Length: 314
Image (cartoon, rainbow, N blue to C red; front, side, top):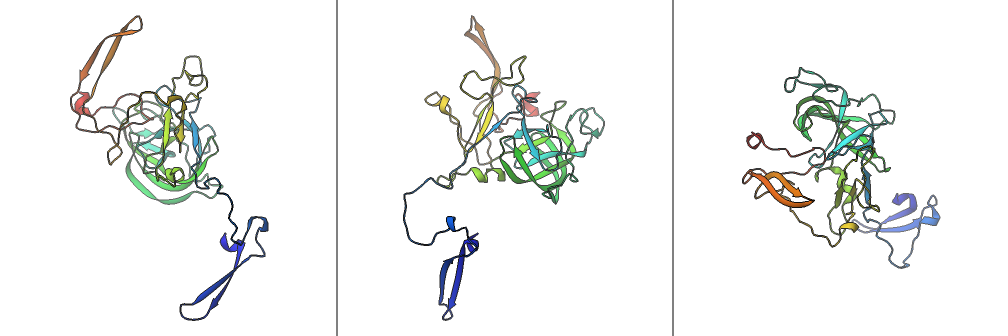
């Protein structure tokens, strides 16, 4: 863009002596091009992060496991919805020829059938925009409890908010494990939003070199197609990228937890159980102590419940 606005004239007067005269290019947008030393009042930071609110998909979300509408080049279904995983570094879509290798007591077959129940809609032939480019293959990659092999492509992903980004997608063609969503709807794929995802490049603050996001989920109430907020002025369910939508929570009690180097969280103890109430007041509790965990934990939005290692679960 520089030389579309500026005409540069170079003068060589020696081995290391170069002078440059800069003029306004005759082809430049003259109203937007300036040469001079005028100083004006400092304006708004041109590199400020522009937050993005991603709303849950009201037609497919569930309690504790939200889904998100998005359009991805190669997926023609206009009603496609995806799980969102904060532990996956890339985005996964289910290929039209996807096969599961025989999980549990189920015979091998199409990923659309039990126990995977995936919407296999990605086809590399759906490339009218020319954005799809095959970039390689992958084997036994992990996405939100799935272990998948297939082919990698360049593509474009757009959220319902209108935010679009060129990304690399993984086309799932063989599923060898479904650890988190066995016999549950797996949607059209998994959007990877881990700290290692290239998605975050547009949300890093240029002064602090940090990116921020917040998660707010609400229950899907009976006889309603969408989650309902308890506070009338707030949005029911959303994830805000590039900012913390925290006005309602300012001044409230909070707990700060720091991640380990691999973006997981260490625990000093883990137990689960129930708190009993009488007339709406806590009266007693029962918790089963699992002791000091040897593994850290992760928080994610594409798994409903508590997942335990086999040794603890048994």
